[in-house]
Length: 530
Image (cartoon, rainbow, N blue to C red; front, side, top):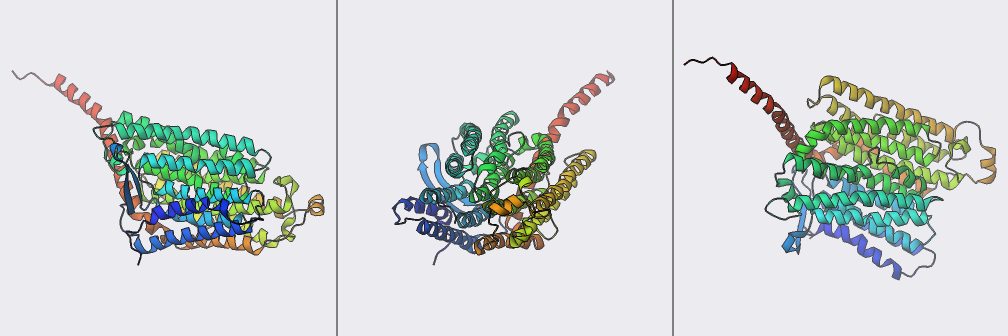
């Protein structure tokens, strides 16, 4: 009988990596054996994660669970340390789910299938490691590990500008990773003890000036990945050239790494700096929402339109993180999971549409709804989910962020009203560009040239299954959010309490100089009684 002492997380990390190493030795000529092998490995790994979660994860505890720790380099207190809490467990589950579906979405791949599925499985393990490791150096290594497969997946299987997009991706993300390493080293060597353990680092007391420098270093790296404007330009280029399974990984998981790390390092480890920098992040979050929504509205390339839509939706994650309320932070985590599911579904449909029309330009589409009724129906439902239709996960997540920020006492009432109003503008823009998108693809007069040169077949069972699998949690969470929120409620409550304490401390520090001045003035005006 397997127990909680079994190395569940270590197994879920190394199983797909080890399995990928066997792919070059599999007897396969046309790629069919390799793809089935990769899918079975993905399903087994996801089943292990779900089994561990269902049997050994305690919803009521905010602490790390499924913890494993093995000595690596004792002189520097480096350990193979993994664990999951309310912040990481939902994203580990999301990773297993989305990556397995992405492997199924890659079924039509015929170019170098061995290498393709090798990279997919290697990336599977690397992504889980990012969310599970509890050592800063291991986190940096896992963060770097997932860059290489994405670069190759873009550079080899991408579109016409794939080399440009892949190079830009690696320059942005690898450059940002250097700031993670520098900040991690500064934290590890600060004080009397040298340690890379995240719990130990979070327990250290750093002066505010040092916290701000560390916060800035982490923020640059995670702002690239999230992404936060103006460090976002790699994402539309990467999405513009990626294939459908890579789209699913980029939108479904990679962007969530930035949000997760921002909460794990910046919020949890550097709460005083977070309380100081929060107003600036509020502005960046609003800019993300509005600017990306307006840019998405103006795009004529289908992939780039959905890419900018993703950037806009991630702005709500930023607002939730800086709300200083449990409801807002809970909404940010829910938005990450929700967008992971919705973004993966939309980008998969973009790929399915391109496979039939062989164009991404909206001007060259039109009237294909009669030929592709099932794809039209799937596009409609997924677009409704993205525009936050009530009853779907996006609505609940954005509502929680809005209410959480609006009820926060960390900001003045006029500031909150202005931010909520501007964010609401972004919400209004979303249905405009998504419904316009549906109209231009499926409605209107048919493009005769497109119909003459392309065979517009409707959705096949594999495609229907993938979208159905994604819609089940989207609708399930939308109707009953507690399915997800109960996983991390204890953790977000703990983090919010920590942030509130830091907020009070910062406020006291601002009042101290005024108190000193008032005391001095009182002494100067006091009458001489002698």
